[in-house]
Length: 111
Image (cartoon, rainbow, N blue to C red):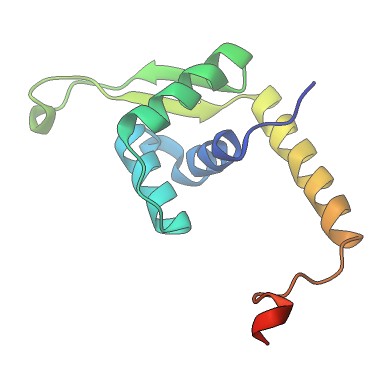
C-alpha cells in the first residue's frame, strides 16, 4: 500500500492532536501553525474526504451550535487503521533518517 501524502499525514496528526475539536477550521489552523504555510479549506477538505474513504478517519456530526447559526460541525477522529498507518509512516521515516547524513541548512556554496 502506498504511503500517505505529506498533507494526509499532517492532517491525520492534527486530528489526533485536536481530539474532539478536530473539525475543518481547527485542523487548517493547526497546519498553518506548524508549517507556516497558508492552507485553504479546500486543501483540507479534499484530503479529509480521501482519508475517510481509505478508512483512516471516521467523521460524525456534532450537536448544532448557536454560534454557527444552528449548523453542525463535522468532527473527525482516527480509526485503528489510521493509527496503524501513522505508525507505519513514522517507522519508514525514522528508518530513512537514521541512515541519512545530516542535511545542512545552507547549500555548501553559501557556507
